[in-house]
View 1 (tube, rainbow, N blue to C red):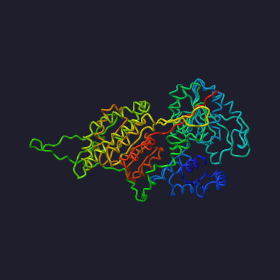
View 2 (view 1 turned 120 degrees about the vertical axis):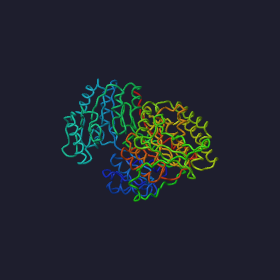
View 3 (view 1 turned 120 degrees about the horizontal axis):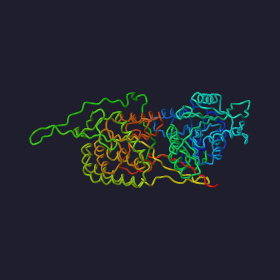
View 4 (view 1 turned 180 degrees about the vertical axis):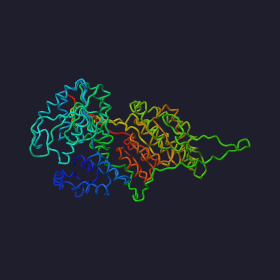
Amino acid sequence: MMAWKIAPAIAMGNTVVLKPAEYTSLTALLFAEIIQNILPPGVVNIITGDGRVAGTALAGGDIDKLAFTGSTEVGRILRKQTAGSGLKLSLELGGKSPFVVFEDADLDGAVEGVVDAIWFNQGQVCCAGSRLIVQENVAEKFIQKLKNRMEKLRVGDPLDKAIDMGAIVDKTQWETVDGWVKRGVSEGGVCYQPNIPMPEKGLFYKPTLITGLDPAAATVQEEIFGPVLVSLTFRTPGEAVELANNTRYGLAASVWSDNINLALDAASKIKAGAVWVNSTNLFDGASGFGGYRESGFGREGGKEGLFEYVRPIWMERPRTGLDMDSLSAKWGGHIPARPSMLTPAPTNGHSLPPVDRTPKMYVGGKQVRPDGHYTVTVTGAKGKLVGQVGDGNRKDIRNAVEAAHKARTSGWAMRHGYNRSQILYFIAENLDARNAEFVKRIVEMTGRTQKSAQAEVDTAVERLFTYAAWADKYGGDIQETTLRGITVAVNEPIGVVGIVCPDEYPLLGFISLMAPAISRGNTVVMIPSQQHPLSATDFYQVLDTSDVPDGVVNIVTGDRDHLTKTLVQHEDVDSIWYFGSAEGCYHVEHESAANMKRTWVGYGLPRDWMSREQGEGHEFLHESTQVKNIWVPTGE
């Protein structure tokens, strides 16, 4: 674990302060003795102590990056503690990893895989295969084989190479494990523990199998962090994937089948950062490791692990200077204002009220009126009223997220990259066909010169072409591990992404954030510039004519932070990108801890959206994807 943290950090030119777990401090200090005459003083520093004291002080110190491995509960605390600070964060948290066995699998081999998955290190491993999911017609046979194998497990001194399981780390954890086993029985499970000899001294716990539980039972859903395996059954491959994904975690998974087509199909659909085919607990420094959802974000190992320890060369050390004492408890609150009346225009010598052409919101491929029927006035640079847009509320955001989920599950991510690229090219062509119209709108809203507005529209068109080209060119690679077989790193879409756009460059900022997200298969809920939203509401007419599937892009206008608060608190949103105020960035990161969704925020600092270096490229593609590593051993 130390190597996973220290090696990539110093390889990329950083210095390190390591706080080891209280139970492993001696190992860390021995490591310090080894490196003290190898590395220059101060490159690696090791601080021991209680996590609540030393760890908390470190997280709140003058550091640039925090990498943490541990429980999801502590991960939430760190996410909240570092919110709004500009500190880069990667979290490798808990798991409830599925171990899926299909009917055509080598059952004896799979049994040995179960032993390695759950009883390795007494189950005190974040990626332990603690949920056994077996195809129904071989379940009885497989469970009997597993029970027979459990009768031969050896429990004792873990330094003895002939021993399978050692002791639980401390009395508190032993009692926690025992409490979960008792709860599993109370939930209707059948507990099996083998009749094997146990050491008289020490915190040893018998390997445990619990069958007959409902998939929603707490014992099935929650991480136990001990030698306890729960078992479920399935009938079809689709049901197997549903059961595997029926968890708030997503760290690792194992899939067992002699049908490689079936195994790889299941591996591609299971939401986990590492999936082992006919194997388990394979690791290599050349391959990334990390989680989805409440198993954290960021990666250890591989090229993606190095990325965690760098920042773009143009970016200064992000420090917001935010006064935490001045943060408003009412952030995101909003009371709709009384709408302003448009100024009547003379027609044939008579003053008639103008036709109400208030732009609608765009949800599920349709123009929709705001749920609350309120509007927001849009004024130009000289204070002149230039239009009105809908004032969205919580219901509008929920509808947009629902539409985005429907588009995601109906196959946008599964479309070939070439198809997504053609749609992006189509969007670019149709935007350029209305080039003059968008230039006029930008001048009207912002008061900028015609030349400046023209440059923004032209750059927006170029940016669409850029991500159309990237749509089928960021798919992952084969990683150079020592495995006899292949280790595939797949850049998967994150899912539903909430995007809050900047005020500067209202069209270009919108395009620069939307395009990379949808090019990589995500669906989006866009909150356009609050100050200049009309470019976005004009843009949905371009989407309507560009073959964009319903729900891939959804646009909700209104008070930015009010809508953002609902978006970041929504449990079915997978990531939030926020380019608003420094205070808003704090609240986005703080609120994201509820389900550990990924965030990408600007900390209220300036970004040159016209620049290719700052406004497009690898950073945007990286934020649009998450890496899944699929391990496929070969040979007999």
